[in-house]
Amino acid sequence: MCGIVGYIGHRKAYPIVLKGLQRLEYRGYDSAGIAIFDGSDIKLSKTKGKVADLQDRLEKEIPTEGNLAFGHTRWATHGVPNDVNSHPHYSNSQNLAIIHNGIIENYGTLRQELIKRGYTFTSETDTEVLVNLIEEIKIKEGVKLGKAVQIALNEVVGAYAITVFDKERPHELVVARLGSPLAIGVGEEEFFIASDASPFIEYTKNAIYLEDGEMAIVSREKGVRIRKIKNDKQVAANVQELKMNLEQIEKGGYEHFMLKEIYEQPNAISDTFRGRMRPKSGIIKMAGIDDNFEKFKNAKRIIIIACGTSWHAGLVAEYIIEELVRTPVEVEYASEFRYRNPIIYPDDVVIAISQSGETADTMAAIKLAKKSGAFVFGVCNVVGSSISRETHAGAYTHAGPEIGVASTKAFTTQITVLVIMSLKLAKEKGTITHTEYHNYLQELDLIPEKVKEALTCNDHVKTVAAKYKEASNFLYLGRGYNFPVALEGALKLKEISYIHAEGYPAAEMKHGPIALIDEQMPVVVIATRKGHYEKVVSNIQEIKSRKGKIIGIVTKGDKAVKELADYVIEVPETSELLTPLLTTIPLQLLSYHIAVMLDKNVDQPRNLAKSVTVE
Ligand code: G6P
Image 1 (tube, helix red, strand yellow):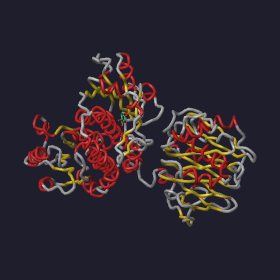
Image 2 (cartoon, rainbow, N blue to C red; image 1 turned 90 degrees about the vertical axis):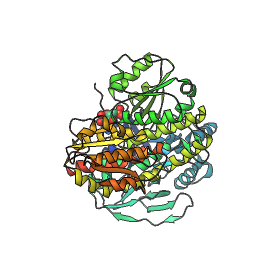
Image 3 (spheres, rainbow, N blue to C red; image 1 turned 60 degrees about the vertical axis):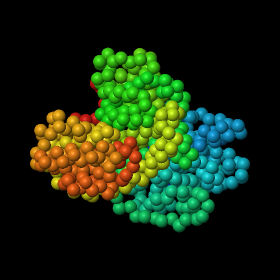
Image 4 (tube, rainbow, N blue to C red; image 1 turned 180 degrees about the vertical axis):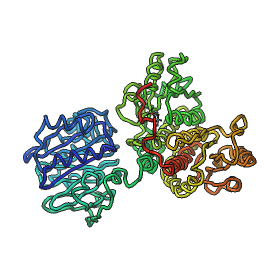
């Protein structure tokens, strides 16, 4: 996820674009850049760091005059965050420049073809490939920028929201979208381009939201002309009147970032698959595994190190890896591991999981593991983060920036990456059958749609939240793959509502927590149909006979739990191994709604921090 902003009109463009980028920093903030057209050339300044760093640098580096400018705040996907990889990117002739939000999956092949034709590249990005492809088509076919963009986009596979400028056509910007958002603000003889409407809300309330697969030529002379990228069909511009305020726009209309991020999960999971998994042909491509397969194959043991929610994702992975890959797994709190003189063998594989990639304890644990000669593999969200650089290899989750302190989409995308890794390893090692492998791939491919379906429980969850929001304690129970989900559900509630909650394996209840149960105690029980179901139903009966209140998280169409529970929340059916990706959803929503009803600061809960870079 990145933020893009553009302006073409009669005002000085630079301050508008700069302020717009500041408003879009929630979309990504590892580097930033702006291109300004000075009347004859495209002047460009970019840097690793925040928009404020860019401002310092740009104002010393290039003149800020000009009525056309466009800029980018980056959330790295291809290539680490550094000055060169930052956007905008020039084409080889420097006649064109581009900003891009998204991922071009076939950029490797396109890059090789362009190199053969004499193009050179300064960055590692997919975006620089796209702008040169556009330039090549423009020259070879003798077409104008708009047509060249259209032809190029028909050759690329992936997701994008782009703005392209050609200094030979100084009155227009060409924009397009597929899978990433793009809005055009329509003013009096001026136009604004942005990932959402926040950069232009004070200039105009009229906006066109491009649909997927559409492109537009935004011209000072001819207005906005929209076409379908695939078949060149003209589309009438649908100008909408904006009714939202600035804050609402940044949060995409959601009240809090946490809720927005919960709802982003179907897309975030799809982004995690993107370019890695082809369910129809049964292919999984993961460079970090492909290049180090022998290490994984020969490992006698996998040690997972992480903190907080990432540690819970590690626990889910323990169950999944042992089931599919048949390699023993140990999951460790990084903070304990680093101080307990652990036994690490050179043929251990250590997987470090971290959303931020900056957690101090996880970082220290990685260094310790490396010292013992183990191979360390990172699963991070933030590209170019310290942990992603310190590890020998890794896989990014591509969840986009997570702003809410309580982690949501990071958790489900971490599990997704770990499932894809496990399936790949299991296939290569021959620890699952061909049929099992293909069935899991098909099921995994359906998960984004099923997460969407799971999210429809929101109103029902609100009712449950209203009923139990005054409780002082909650118990969360689950078994197998859903035991860690119970821990994560309890953590979410503690973090943002400050209600005491404990997660337990359902069968362990009789060894202690059952003593806590009375009519005041809500117990959230995850009871999916294939997950030791009868045993969990017995546990529910035990709670009921002690007058505990039962909230069952069940598979759609469930009957037995419905009869016993005070409330049930249904999730779609899937392979048991993938259920954590669905059962987590109602638990995230439950904690969210309780915290909102208790008037807590959902996105910035007391005493917590998003990235814990101290011990
Ligand atoms: C903090 C955050 C948690 C997160 C944990 C680990 O406590 O508030 O949401 O799970 O750190 O962070 P990491 O970035 O390493 O996943």
